Image (cartoon, rainbow, N blue to C red; front, side, top):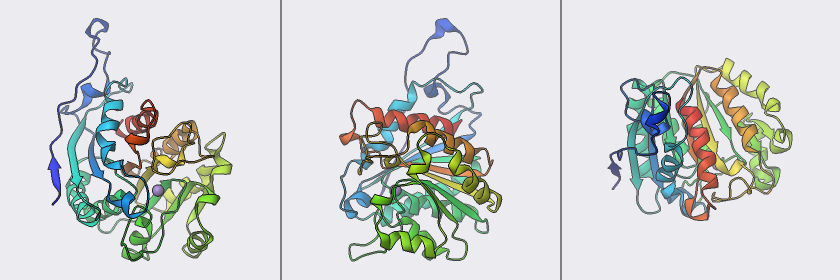
Length: 303
Ligand SMILES: [Mn+2]
């Protein structure tokens, strides 16, 4: 049974002595001029099935908490908080179905929708929500991630390691997938060979250590041939020092400023209707530093 929890009121710091421009993100929640919406996917089922560390279910409130007191962007616009879907147990499928059902009307109504996962099984709900809202669109997928997440579905069923395999099964002809930040050591040759077979565009983490530029051609080409972009950010692409609070930490990783550059370039296409931020694991975080990375990215996506 999937529970839908309504959004809690946003609270945070106020500095009225500084005047009308002293806005923070919590001030933008629920404003009438909402140009985006967010929804939380509180789910441990995907990482449990993927033999990984639980905790992703605690991510949505942790990201909201880190987001609330960030300064609003220069030209602030409101956002709508659609609350959280709470997925019990170790089967992600009912939760993914509920996510797709909740997302479709949000995507139809708001220019951009942001999902706060959950493990990467979130993607199988996200993508289907977008597909439901836009049945005929060419959907390009930009995944900023250390992993391909195209594993075959084994006896334990779909997990946080299989979502892009599931998407390809659902849409073999339309599947157009790029992975930015891949760590060679974290993907077996079976998966890398499958990615070659499926024409997955890959930019490895080695090429993304100082600048996002090595990813621009892939992003631009994918954007040009797509009607809409689904951007998915797996926080385990970040170096362990910046992002200890994920299910699977990266020894090398892609630094936050480079990830921000990749996100900015993808947003510059003007085609990102849906984005998600996944794999935050608050019980493994230190001093909220991973949640803060997630919040910086969420602020950019909502803005
Ligand atoms: Mn992933």
